[in-house]
Length: 527
Image 1: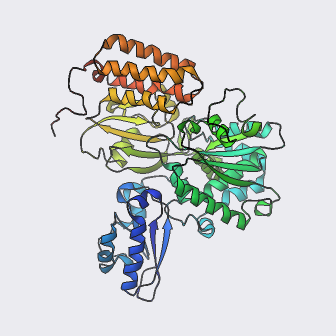
Image 2 (image 1 turned 120 degrees about the vertical axis):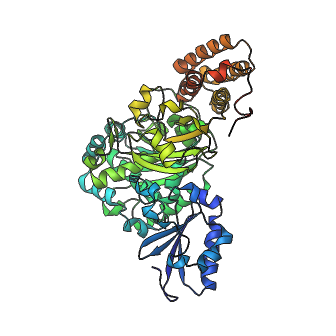
Image 3 (image 1 turned 90 degrees about the vertical axis):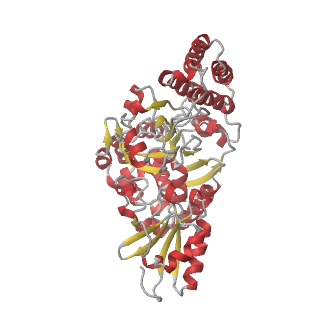
């Protein structure tokens, strides 16, 4: 709490890698230096990020009125803020952080602790409700856990939206003396960062969710497959695993229950395709990341040929809430067959980027114009891509589309991992379609011809369209090529690449047909 010179003040500064990239470490050091110069005792707690990217580095001070926020704070501003009363929650502040509209209008379930707790402190995790779900799971046993997960309606947050309870029950029923739980944290989609923020801001939640899954299906080993571009997440996870083992949360006798489960971290090698579950399993086995043919499905023959749960980070974290609060409480959130909350990640040309956790059913307009505040450039929104680089481009006419799996499928789009990337009216959608094909050509594992060759031919065909060469014939050829890739590719990499291409042609046809004019990206535009 804040107070006089002899009272220790708690100051929270994010250690999230995004916050660190804009100076959070230097800000923390300056707070310590300025407090010492003022004769004030401070305790600096490094947290995850609240997810308000435009306010980073965000400094919070514990007071009798709650945590008072200041941001964005630059290192050179700290001394002046301390002189003005920062350590007492005074001066030019944002007010109580929990009262900020961005946060109080959300329904944070998975992200409830992120930005609040010290991610490496197990006591901090316990103080904020940690392990409630795992203790409940150990109390009721595997069958009740499976029933709860099925009844809750939790669907895979990695993009496919497959019911988690069905997958877990399949693994539980599979024969095998050794089973695995794998958390797919190879978060490679453009505009997505929720997995990273969980691992850096609340890693014990992921470990708890994996342990619940292990108990439910009879697995004894878990692996977190983290993309190599996330070194801070890897370090935080490994520190959390060490602490969890010391507390008996992981190991041969989890919480004295007699159930044994342990987790290890494995770092990827930079291949986007390893976000696909079977390619990830190949990489975990020490092989080149290439897609496997299905069947068999990983639930029956996964890691090293054993029954394996493969879930996204957010899916496994959702299990902790289902067990802690009950399946009914989770079912009350969301709409239709899309139950619970989704963590939407706002990026691209947007004024207020960051994390929004809300029940399924919130509209795209609510996210882009409400939470996001429109474009950063101040120009009109022209297109929004949802679901990563393989997601459809949606025009402004579709901004009232509710964010749920079925509504997006009906609109010829996909929700994916919840990434939302915004473009203003200077974007050239023909070039965006080319980017989708080029991305597939670069990231394809090469195993199947429709993806490996089709993407290269797709780039060549779009280049002809952009050059104005036989536009109608080449657009017809492009459509045929997209159909072949959709129907013939071995996995979603090639199968979904046509989605952004076709949506760009469908919704923004003028960018393909009218190539005589100067492209959007370079023509003179009125303010």
